[in-house]
Image (cartoon, rainbow, N blue to C red):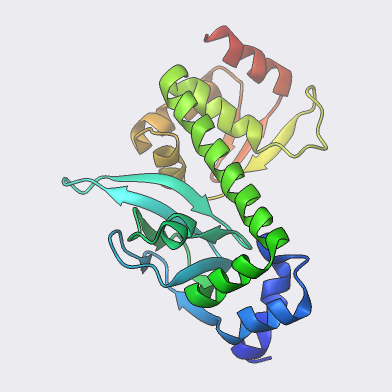
Length: 232
């Protein structure tokens, strides 16, 4: 299957676009394009004009801002079937942050004009987009609260607990796999990579976790949660 033929299938897999009538999907697909971006390459740069909405098909993209001394702050990591660029698209502004591939990544780009026309003509589609934006705003609000109210150790424990699949109970031993590189996670948690690694070592020394590369085993979830609460 060539890239153009894949587009309608890709659109059906995107949560934001599921449930759309076939004619709308076909019009979006007709103006869509497929991009391949190598690891560490830019998807778009801060300050560039927005020409549409990006959807990650395979891989990961980090949304970030770089300081004058070269340090970067990661705001969000976008995974498969997730979208990015909504702020610039709907406000008609340049991109407020940059987007960079964490690994080799395939994306679908939906043209701005077509997308806005379909939103204007389909109220249910518009409501779905509003709901998606509201969820993202809520995540960012929770992140801001954690930066202001939680210590670095508490932030790391919160992150690990959030990675536990729902099927596990509070008393299970469980192994989680970090979803992306440790440096990216550290920046997302508003920590330096050195601080993040030190917290993992401290939790390991306290027998609360066991680290093997990207895999982290939590022998006792309840004990880890109790430890987090004791830090308050």
